[in-house]
Image (cartoon, rainbow, N blue to C red):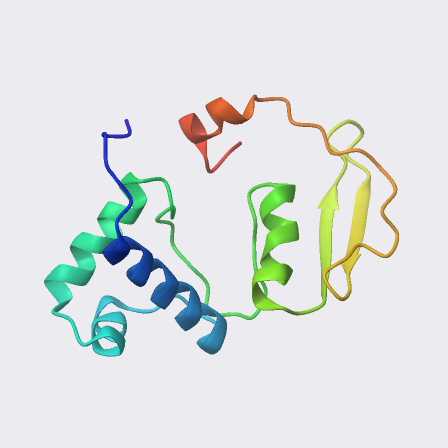
Amino acid sequence: MRKNLTYTPTDATLRLALYRFIVARGHVPKIRELAAALSRPEKIIRAGIRRLAQLHIIVLQPQSRKRSWWASCIWDALAIPLMLRSEAVITTACACCDSSMRLTVRNGRLPSANGVIHFAVPASRWYENIVLT
């Protein structure tokens, strides 16, 4: 359950450093790497990462070192190439008929954007099971 936490400038600094590290190096940093990048003690970084998770800013999950990315929903799948400022091919499936679908992102856009995105769970309830929503 989310506690009443306020997003602080310190949280923003850690979040931005985390995102920049991922984009630059293609993998999620180890605590020691992020601590070195910010010149902060590992204990502080570890607590900050837990705080970002409590704020629902990040979701802590095992990660891959490959340059392919996995997203739990289409919003995330479309956001990843925008965050990375790169082109992408998104492989997914229609939730209704399970037909294979491929979406291409070029210059921050979907050149061929036919279709409908449907969310079966209201956005206000996504975080109840963020990994499977």
